[in-house]
Length: 139
Image (cartoon, rainbow, N blue to C red; front, top):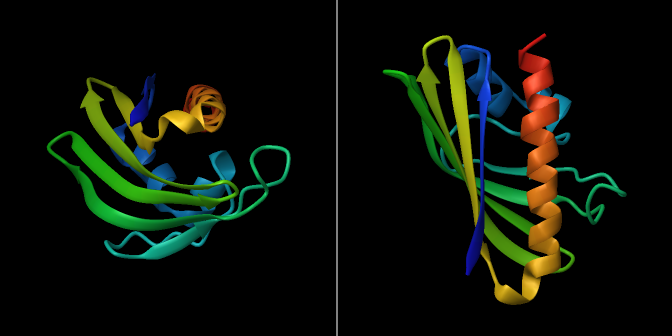
């Protein structure tokens, strides 16, 4: 199994970045429309629009939720798509560094036969984190 690892430093405080990871309306601004609720064990759906992904919903479950404390935060949830069926895990770690926040993601669980899908997700994370999320927080 392989994984995607991306890291971006955002010129924003950790609490502000955290809000864009855990508030449904803010998640929708940079990732996808969703019914996210910030509570461990919550099952939620992200609506992947056609043209960006398969057009099928992404089914998720929050496995770990550690709000900002002492300059660190963590969010982990499953990422399940139907077409083709793929079950992966998304781990997001935030670390406050001076007046910035480093956002590290690891998207793991990709089988070797899913290299095209994994590559599309890797390019997606580059755009979503490095362009869309950063732009919302640094304006």
